[in-house]
Length: 325
Image 1 (spheres, one colour):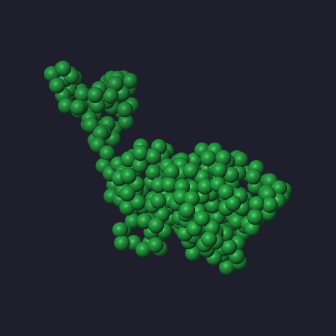
Image 2: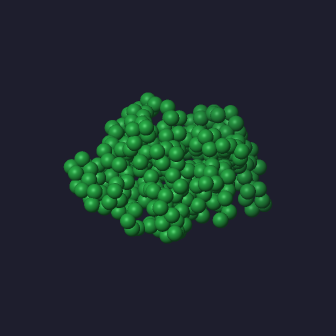
Image 3: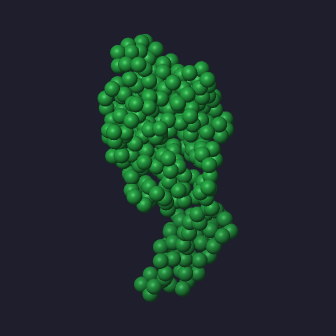
């Protein structure tokens, strides 16, 4: 704030405040060296620097770097109750491949900056966006996580199986973590098969890992499957998708289908899924959703409305549309 007759120190004090502030902020002199040069205590130097800020001699200005949208991120965080929003700069004319590449790079940078080394991470199996992220991550020089666990069935048609394996295997190698695979498909023929598979000792072990996760990294899907999901054998049939749309479905996370308000669509489809339970998923402290583009906008909004994610990584155009709602 500007100096006023009520806050202005005496002239000699102004001179000392200014001198100390210039030495510290402009010349980079350490507080101990300032104290020695001016024959005052280091504690007094610290008090003078605080005083210089309070009377307006020193003012802090944050300059936002190009391609960083801090204000928009804060709007999303406040509007949707997010712990963090990450807005990625994407060309408005970008095609699907360019969008995925940009989202993947943004998500990779976010993870590289925030992983603690002790995280136990769950990851969705069939997301093209997650694969784009994994492909753009650099190997950690120190361990980035203790384990990486599939959140839903990762077994699929042979021509698509490498997608699921790459997500988990390469992410684990990059982070120096142990991989935990789900040796089952994501969607099975009927609830009885699902129940039987969940009772298998290997799935019981996976469920134990699900209970201990500290973080989840997930794509946010629309009801219409991606090309990879469609060829994997883990997508819902066209008739099932029509039924889900009739029930108000807009998107999914780990094959858990939700409506525009974020509520779960229960029923015959949900009963055939082999994936982390909704209760377990919501119990994970940090849940990172990565998605963008016009095709995913309703799904992203539903995920935010239903508190499915605590952190969102999305593109600029989607972020602006979400903030305007």
